[in-house]
Image 1 (cartoon, rainbow over the protein chains, first blue to last red):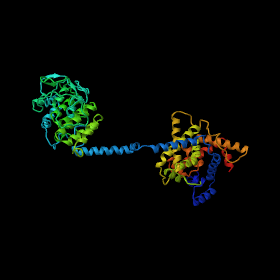
Image 2: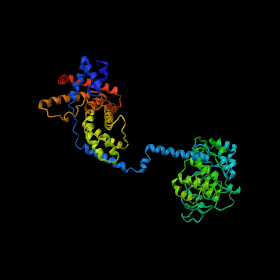
Image 3: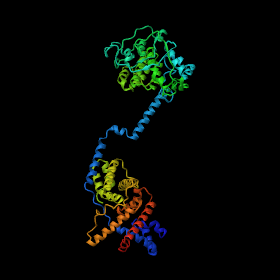
Length: 390
Length: 198
């Protein structure tokens, strides 16, 4: 460029974008500067050549196509349902954040701590209305210490419930029960629905472990009873009658349990694969030991708790049963079984008149499709329990 | 320009007057298509880019807000320009020939202005073809600036808004574009002639 002025202003002058004063100044400069005039002339020659560049004819049909597509896009947008904009990325993010905040606040309110794992709620909280016998043992530091060792932990699990022998048997294999057994057709059950639900048709069945509930009886928790008839649960019903502990007797898998067969399961392999087992909501005394519980292995979580839940429910040990539902759930069983377990825990609390806890458990069950309707019916039948327990 | 300006038409469309978009389309479609055609040197691609640009505009119009330093026209050309550059980038990545290597397809489609005689028409066509070849040889960032300024008659500030470059960069690119075109025309024996014809 010839000079600083032209470097800065010549293009504006060429295209008529200078103000009046600048334009006059530029014209005076161009009269004196042949070099700048030469540059300007070269630019003008290009402009003259470009003057012949006219707009092109539009391709046939382009205008119509654009209009048609535009109208289609407009109509589609007008038809866009509420749901779709609710889930636009921005709004979805806000929604998720809001839900997370509510869950967090609820958890903090109810459990006093941030849920780091998907574990039991405040099952053993100090403000429980009715401390249950086994809780004190479960809270014992030495019991927790034992839990760190798979064998000791396994023994503790069983010791708490079962008579003991040293006969090792394979760990229980849990399988989903058939919907009806022993010739009792579905829907013909005249028992209270809770008892029906407590039976294996609800989805619990384990075999091979030899685990029984004799200890419950021997310890005065179960008394003497006959194996219950098994029947289909009646959705929506939830009795106040206790679940007979023997309703879980068949969890041992082969029909009626053998009272003389007392076993301790061989300790599960010390597989150290951690599960997402519960730490959330561990009771205050356990909070500092929460990692102990989370160290329950997948295999333990898969194989142990289901029958334990049934037995605990049968023994009205609702708090422990609730913990074990969380542990059991961490083992990744079929959701249907988890839902059934939650409903049993709900029944358990309901029988004890602890409606809030019952409602909490039922809400968990309501999250699982297979038990949603039953849980909702249960919740509706409860007296007003207010918001989730805090 | 008679009737409502672009911004008024946009506002009308946002109020639900769908005919407003048709007016906007009618007002700008030829210019956008010509710009795309000269940027890309390929008629079919220019047609697709033009269509896609207007569709993007119609989808974005409900949320469009007229900024203090931008207008609908700049907005429309920015969309078209971005799509042209995307296509050119894809083309270069795919090893396809560049516009300068290809024979530009718009040569025979241009509409002569006025009612020139046969000699003048022949000369105009020769000049136009030379200029189109010269344009194809320019880097895209210079080509777009020249087209927006010279052919679309945008103010330098609007060119800056369309290209996202600052004003000095736009002016620099435009200077290079004019120099490059002048040299190209000179090599074809047209530059001096055009200059002398002033």
